[in-house]
Length: 250
Length: 319
Image (cartoon, rainbow over all chains, first blue to last red; front, side, top):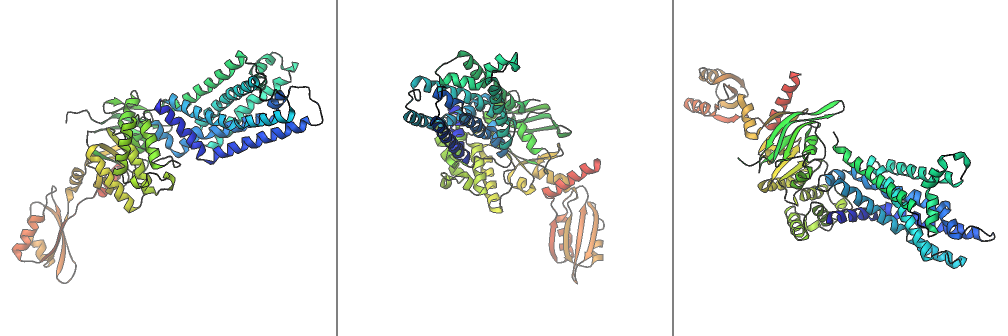
């Protein structure tokens, strides 16, 4: 266990000692700020029928944060160690492959959650401005953070997988961004509920992260969403472990 | 020596697509030895070390460290080795002590032993003064010492060092070599290098590898002896060329004699012995008997460099 914590600490330390950590935090703050401005400007003048929190979690700004931060946070995890050679030093200590993968993932997840903390402030401001008690209401806020955690975990697991495949951080970031964008794009296409989708409609609806986030934000915790997100996370972590192990395949 | 060998390599083969990096390697390193693994760049040194450290699998063959198979019992092996990879990769954003603490934790040292060992290796490597500096801001010599400190912080059975002095200036090289020598007193050390003098200075035994094959494996002295078969003796005496040739004409151990005049008084005679005999005493006696002045008497020793060139040249001619 001390080995695991040492690795997690190293992972977090690496984020804070490089520019990436601060850039990610700045980007998140900037996007949260924009989403706040956007929401306020949309509220002024026109009346909206959709519940306000839903409007927030469906906005492009919210998804931009997820789509951009996960690749930036995880691109370092394996790729940078491979490029600098410290990967070889790490993998020749008596540390297991699974331990390394889980530690890198946990470190990324902790940092990711940290970057989301300012959201609480944004919600408080929105509640103040709109006088809408739905913002910062315990159930929906808890649900929203659970959604952010679980969807984020899936995106970060995809990022770890992409990072394990290459020694270039750039390639890792692009790959993981494309994976994330793909899933989000599928979710978008199901949002229209077009009949053209035919038999794929229900499938797309099931994997729609937008739909899942809307449910979480409403305080609804659907077990199907949990199974999909947690299962997906473990699937990508499993793939990452296989990639790490593949070095030893003959 | 009845103890299990620390390194045992049997018919080790490593193939990369389209190229054989290691071609049936066989060698043994016993406990307490300091063995140099010598070869030009691309000979297969790093590949061998990566296989020994369990980082890469071999295509065929067996490699054991302290009796454990490097592939099937990788974790046991990793516990017993301290490995410094090529180019000494370090986390440049960490402080020296912090880095060693992190590495010691990965290697499973409890906190009490960790503190004790870190203090010891910092001291031994001359890093105590810079222990709170960021590694990225240290000179290359210091970084190399950090890598070495990491390699033996957990007191492993075997220390594997891949090109430990590459890219250092002469002062730093000297310091690192002294450190390796010191390590060799307590540990088995297996180090690779392409610098011949390094092996002569630090190692008790040398394994020469070229194009994935072992060309020679012996103590440095033995290798020199083997190749010193034609250990030529040079003498400069004050005599005429004819009288020198005449004086040594009937020597049974002399294969050839070549005399050249170098100035008004002295001639330079090159004696090539038969069967590697050392002719110096004989020559001296002869010179004294005849009352000649002698101003030089040397036997050319083959440096490891000659051995290396000789061995690799033969290999090329075979092909």
